[in-house]
Length: 239
Length: 239
DNA sequence: CGTGATATTGAATTGCATCAAGCTAAGTGG
DNA sequence: CCACTTAGCTTGATGCAATTCAATATCACG
Image (cartoon, rainbow over all chains, first blue to last red; front, top):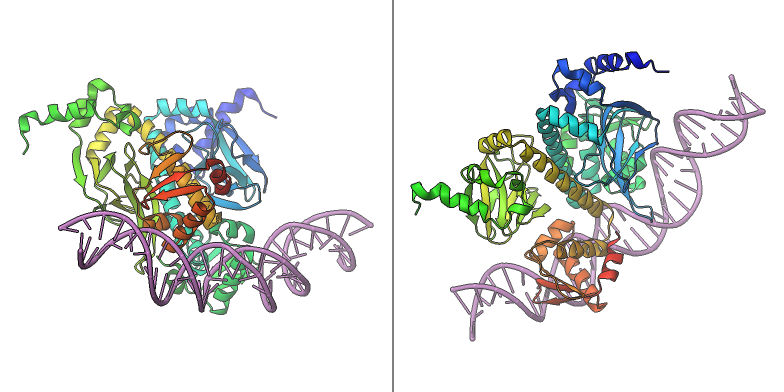
């Protein structure tokens, strides 16, 4: 139930106290103008496995993640799937030069996003030119990540791919750290890891099993991995 | 030999009559302001195989191609190389959120570029906000291309990769067209094609030989390919 | 016309995929 | 709360696409 009269005020408070603002594109908007931001967005939730936007659909909105993990992927009619990337809180998706989505976005975990209708985003960019600077900069970061991924897919072995993956996502802000080793609590299934790395689940499983045997990582309850020997791991990963 | 007094005027004429302006980021600058653009850039030439910027070097300039083809690549000490992308006239490279180049840029053919020192580009973006819009839009296009490439590298077979490659570059503006079939005059070597597709030269060669045997393409003097049966080719390419 | 760079072709090898069970854990309904 | 169910994960045996190694052919440039 929404009380119209309070909506903007509520939203503004939301943006002001938003936990991802500093890391997100909206950090370009000065604090005193947050009400404009807040009134431009819709807060929406998606459950695990729900599709947020579909490849080929007309691009009507831009999304900023406030909690949860989203995967972007493309697939072929024969079922082959390639995950383009994962997006974490503070990151956005569904920005494009064309008027159609180039990939499907699906919630990997339960997800909360701010949805901005295209026209609202445009208006915001006009009012706050720094927003464009920020979006450009974040897009460049995504481009650099794509370069990493292109190298990984084109030239790395299964073992190198998995090692790179573990290192990369153990650095993600949403992961816990501890003492000397590092923990990765992977929100995604083996299939999703495989579809991200251009491998099969079986291969991912085997490579992980080898790394466990070599005492480089250890696995508890299959989704939480602790990196025991980070030096070896980064040697294997090949950067 | 440069006559200082005439330099700006010459440059302005250069920008005004520039053959790639319409396709390039600088189309965002109004014609009457071209002298500001012209005075911000340095025109530089590079011979085939010359390195323009190197991965890891500090990012000092931004480049816009006016003629020729540039490849962007990353490589590992053991020699494995992955070409991230090719850039054609009207396209830019070396834009990044960080202060270091994320990949090496090398001239595939003789190349002419406009080089913009970072500070000059920033100044231009301040004067002409539409420039940022344009850069953002072109970056999004590069992101979409990266998505294509990620799918190709992760999930396509050698045959599908080569077919996709031929179709993609037969559409590039710098290629000639003709009647029903299409010609691709590839500026790059087999090794470069392989390093782009995540394959070896031998595999590229074999796949091309098969396509010739099946009368889908024909090859004259190894760098010029004509696409005889485009329907089959796009069926093979899997989009 | 000769020489080094580039491209093709063949044979052998291999890393990862595929196919096929089995196992584990997290629900779910009785 | 426990048996049943099922999605997700692991492990093993086999196959095959692409690589590797090796030799030859062709192109391009002085």
